[in-house]
Image (cartoon, rainbow, N blue to C red; front, side, top):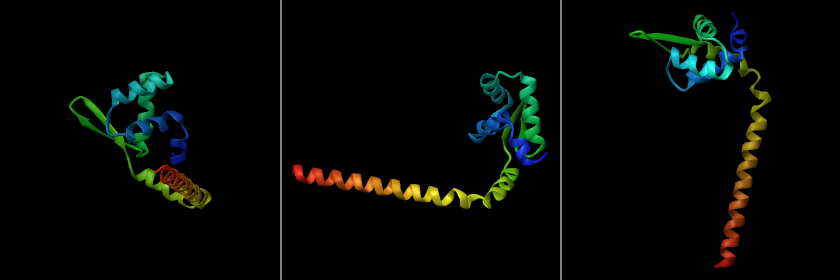
Length: 119
């Protein structure tokens, strides 16, 4: 399955978001996803299986529990693919950062000027 086919599903994307916060027990992941999407435990398990089989999630056993974490390799592949498109959003974001900094500086200088006039 292609990485974007895996990530195209909102449930699987949300599972990855949950796992991005750190390793989670399968039951914990299921609880979050069932509450948010209203799907059954077997459906959540199938999504976890797709993520696991495609390397987006890794699992380890801890006694009777299965602990899931984000698998890094496929995300690196997605990042590499997206790299050719970064030029479309990086300059505007950098320009926005510059404008925000400029605005903060102007507000700070205006506040300092006002404070100086009061003294």
